[in-house]
Length: 263
Image 1 (tube, one colour):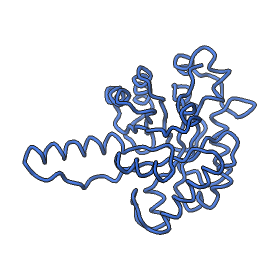
Image 2 (cartoon, rainbow, N blue to C red; image 1 turned 90 degrees about the vertical axis):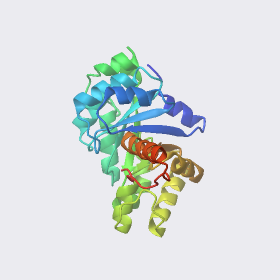
Image 3 (cartoon, rainbow, N blue to C red; image 1 turned 180 degrees about the horizontal axis):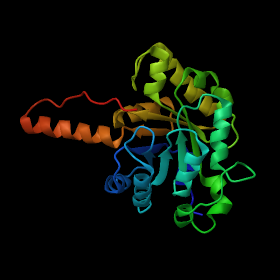
Image 4 (cartoon, rainbow, N blue to C red; image 1 turned 135 degrees about the horizontal axis):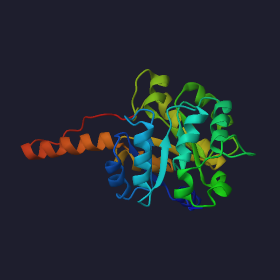
């Protein structure tokens, strides 16, 4: 089976730079796949992407060296199994707030006896190889999103979930629930404490600590803080930022710093 390079890089203490796709386009997916990211995530939760578009995007990504990931809309097992059968090599599951939810998520990603994943890998065989069924449980990446106060409360139990590779902070949702305002770069004391706690616990338990960021500079800062899986904005944010900068430069104006905070 094709190896999951994310797991290999993490074993070598190399941080993962993850691209993020919200625009339903196989062409934009192909472009992102060739830019040097270690992984690229197709977003089925907040992006404008349906399953048919996601399939073509995964096909485009498979022609590049990146590891194809999918953020599913929720923890429904059928949703999770479908994107894995389509060739996703990892799943990011939103709104995981308890150990039970984390266990159900991981179980949907694993074939028996480790889980309940139904057999029918379809495109997984094409991308992963003929021996995919024998090794998928080992290679498929599982990241649970920590976005709620309840998720923080149960962080230790979530990280103890057998087969869970790590957690991924949704900073806007977490900031919203902790401070009342959605801010990916919140400096509110409670938010700073939560981020420090996630990084610390992940380090102790040798788990992935991931987070969505608003820019490359913000991602570099998160790596310095101890995160080893960072997303430096998504395609929508990058397209908007590049357009605003190009327009400002053409008009001889200062480059604007405002824009979407991501999700």
